Length: 108
Image (tube, rainbow, N blue to C red; front, side, top):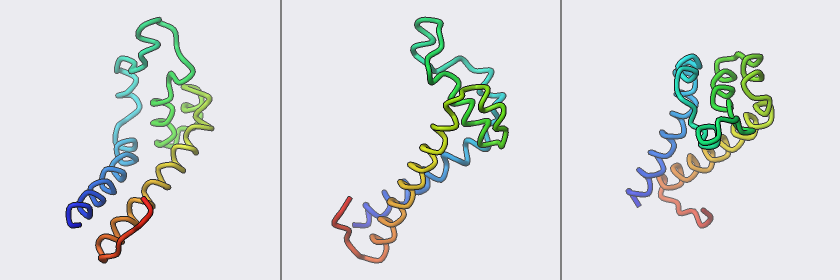
């Protein structure tokens, strides 16, 4: 039970680090790195998702025009990612609270 509580707390901490890292890492740093896209690295051609990491980074710094220039799908992907992040954060935090107060959750 204590192990599950620490596990849930660790997941909450890891989830909190994701937006913090997006804010702390400058987009310029990402621009200087080689692309992580396997498709682009193998073929030399961009895929529909190319530029999404830089686009999300730019949006997290408030530069939405630059984000849109990196990948136009950011207007769809960023809200979905934000929603899924918030959903997972809420679920994990509720699990931690239930474990911290000694209540068991049946659904997980």
